[in-house]
Length: 200
Image 1: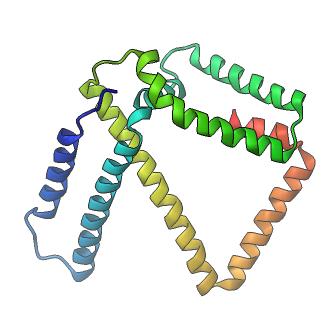
Image 2: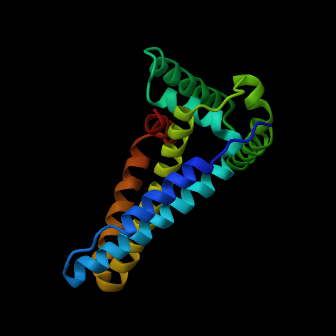
């Protein structure tokens, strides 16, 4: 299978981080210096994790770019096709009415098949013998967005844990009220229909 060259992108990230780290320094307050060092460390970590994610998703590059084009609605018929596919999937689930264990088993089985078959079939289906600079840049942006989203989720979780330690009463009330609201919504609306509305 065709392997893409990530050296140019990694070199660009390294130059960007190095330039930011060795920028001319002015007399800054202590807080600003600490914040700048933290930004340098964060940018370096994000660049490294982005490069690692690109390596891990190498076989999924064409599929990820195709999905990105669909989600960004590059063509006018993409929204209708997306809603149609999601609706057909939920109608099939409603008709079959599988148990939780069956649904979970089938979902994991499909994920395993996709993980095995997609890297093999994607180059043949998409017929991509050349990975252009524009495609590589867009793939890099997607991976970088995924890494930043993961950091945002972890940061939110750490903030929640800090709230639990610092203000346990506020943490308790917030969690209980949120869960009660979700339970009430789940009781009023069918769970499959609610999932369908969330997915579409």
